[in-house]
Length: 452
Image 1 (cartoon, rainbow, N blue to C red):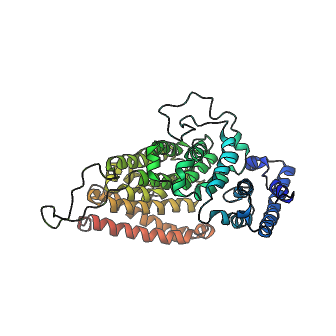
Image 2: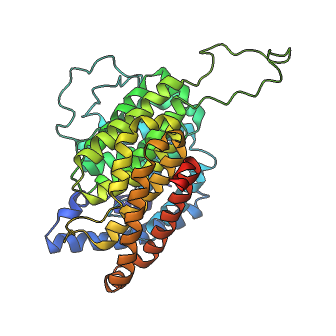
Image 3: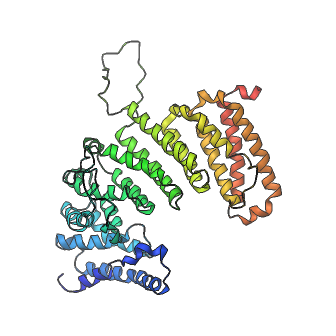
């Protein structure tokens, strides 16, 4: 495959740097050029796919050409303003032969060494040993990690990294750890929210295959947790809701990998251990309840309650995102979440009450979605912390009663506004159902509330 056709096709797939500021462009001529290029990408990808089909597929090429093609095409497998509607499916069809079942180690090493490592070399992560991928005991004395940032000029490099992460065999991570981790952490610790969001997504891809022992042995488990916790500090940004929705499940995945829940012990057949059972000594299991609870408490108490709810109260979309994530965190935390009821119950019940002064800027649909989300979280809170609900039963039932009266007013007096809001009427019906469900769950947790 030495003809000039392949180099020309790969050159046509090089993404223009102006896409890095696509959302901020105002020059109509540049925008038109970018859109024309974007619409022509599908033709180039189709030509490349057909060319490979005539040469017995991509696997028959030399390793360096396989890596070059993969590094160019994988940029279209993921999010990005430069990706046309059918470009992603075309890219996947070209790359699929390389991922059955995983990327060949030689091709992977070539991509990481020649196409990714040089891009991030100018901005080494200060907390990583770049030769081993281990966490440094103290930050390295290097230049500002945010200076220059050449990697931001390589549009689509995050998609290439993500494609590699999703297709690495677990047993291969050890040999490429020092090549994979620095780019992921560079994205995750960036100061701009869009790149940090991409970093959270890359961390999620990493956690889907990485061996947990490798995370713990290199000290990266704590480094990842600290970086993921820091994403909740990016408030008052258009990407804040997306960051919250991405960071919470990724953080929980990390906690499950490095501090899995303790398995429930089997019930003993008698008061003494039988001959067929052995007593497991403390510390011999991978489970670490204390570390798990500490991390879950940080996520719930410091990140969601102490940061988002406390400082983003004026941003309804950020509050909605954090409330949407609460049931997942509460389910993981279990009865340990009772420690935070003094903050959770007022937060969730207050959202159910009608505002003293209606907000002229908050659409009815946003307010309804927050009420529905708060009720879902409240139902989960009642279930997981049922033994402590007797302290809050009157607060909860008072809020539910006021909310029921409010939703009836919305139905019968705000029908015109409901008709204008897309899907608002179905949200109201769900809201009424959840109010009833909350009453049932509260009655199950506190039977005395029925006679009160």
